[in-house]
Amino acid sequence: MQTRDEIRNIAIIAHVDHGKTTLVDQLLHHSGTFRDNEAVDDRAMDSNDLEKERGITILAKNTAINYGDTRVNILDTPGHADFGGEVERIMKMVDGVLLVVDAYEGCMPQTRFVLKKALEQNLKPVVVLNKIDRPNARPGEVVDEVLDLFIELGANDDQLEFPVVYASALQGTSGEEPEDQQETMDPIFKVIMDYVPAPSHDVNATLQFQITLLDYNDYVGRIGVGRIVRGNMKVGDHVSLIKKDGTIKKFRITKLFGFIGLKRVEIESAEAGDIIAIAGLEDINVGETVCSVDDPDPLPILRIDEPTLQMT
Ligand code: GDP
Image (cartoon, rainbow, N blue to C red; front, side, top):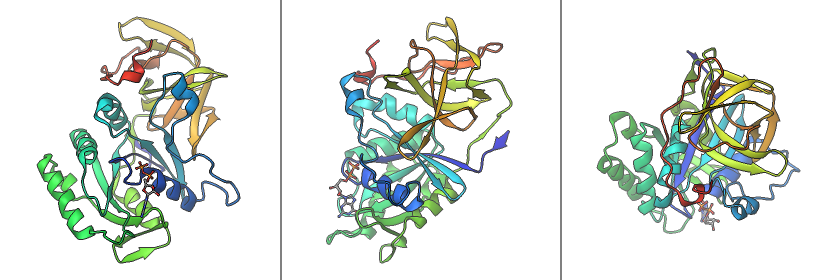
């Protein structure tokens, strides 16, 4: 086993409008992942119209943020109960979650829904109380509400010790206390570093990589997104794809993609703990496992129940 201290994989979860998109934009800006003169046209988490049109919207976007020497992968998560399967699959790719709650509105139905999923997956949440700048913000009460919700949803002792950071994503401030706000996102990055475990995997074992989300690109066709569970892969490798019915297809990896900021970038190789995307086989579907040709060992089937993915 090898611990990859240079990586954190987290999902960001919240009720709609509590500020996920604004917060991820701020984290990007403050980390310097974008050069100062490089405008961010798209808001971080907005889904791509083309993908929407094709009906294979992945609905979740990976934003990779370099903070010092650490790469933080932040996976967006749909809050709606129709996408329970997708939420579960995303949670299997991460080691922690960032729960964003509006400091005025407090816990809402989708807060409960996504938090329940995270707690079930044994993930340790970090809580961000956002919109602390709102005139009617009531951070003390809302933290109590969040704690009550954790208890009600059966959080374990570890999970109950969640750290809280107070923030105004809109104004670009955060801090350990509501009245102690700094014009930086460092307090948020620091709790992520301290509380979310780094991935720990066997990078020398035979490859296992499960397709968790689908994406599409006009040049390379269908793209499977997921986390490498064990082993490693590189462009040109011959691998086996285990279909859901157990049949095996062999293919060659033509392209591997990593992420920088909001962009997908080509990479040559990747290893266990990395969240990556893979191209080379049109007939790739959610839940299928890519493994080494010599050791075809499928991962357990994933739940798929969201309407947009029932298209093949
Ligand atoms: P999402 O649905 O969780 O992605 O939420 P958005 O990031 O799109 O934010 C929803 C609305 O809340 C937008 O109008 C934001 O400008 C606003 N908003 C986000 N963060 C803050 C904040 O810290 N303070 C205030 N006052 N408004 C915010």
